[in-house]
Length: 258
Image (tube, rainbow, N blue to C red):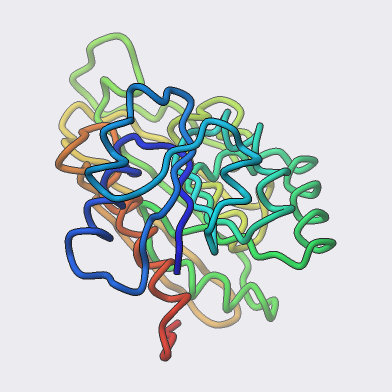
């Protein structure tokens, strides 16, 4: 599988290292779209790839799938054109938080017979949630995300503080950079309005902690994920980067689990 990568930041660099230095011979990054050619020129020789600064040229290069590893703004700008031409993996899932834009992308995919893949990112359990939602035996989905206090509030605090409580739709509007997990849950389960979200600023927390509870006719399920940052970048989720590799490997695997 020949991968075209959009963005060469922390996650993009992680993908390059994992796919080119650990004998993943069936998956290779061959093209990268960047804004600044000079800044990333060294990657061409280091990883035997080609850089592009024009999106059309990138999309028509010798690639099988596009992996977006840029940011929400870039994803919103480019995604409609990308999915017209290629199957796509989107990391910046926040781009799909607005219903009108999500529906636009769905329509383009349908017309052009392409696939859109959304890696699980910083959490797990989405397979169970999708399964029970697909047959309508799910009633509630709730998320409590606990983060280091300094990432959510400007003033120093000694006690954990609930800074938001509501649904996923409201959480996304108020904390667009801190609540991507709620978007994944809402899309997998019962929607933005019905997915309950609490966001806690905790001065004692050293990592992001996501606690998910699901209930319905099937029974109940709870998950807790303590997410460490990528070793090379403390602002990037380790699981988010890993989930992209997992998504790509599932595409070429002969046995698919979940």
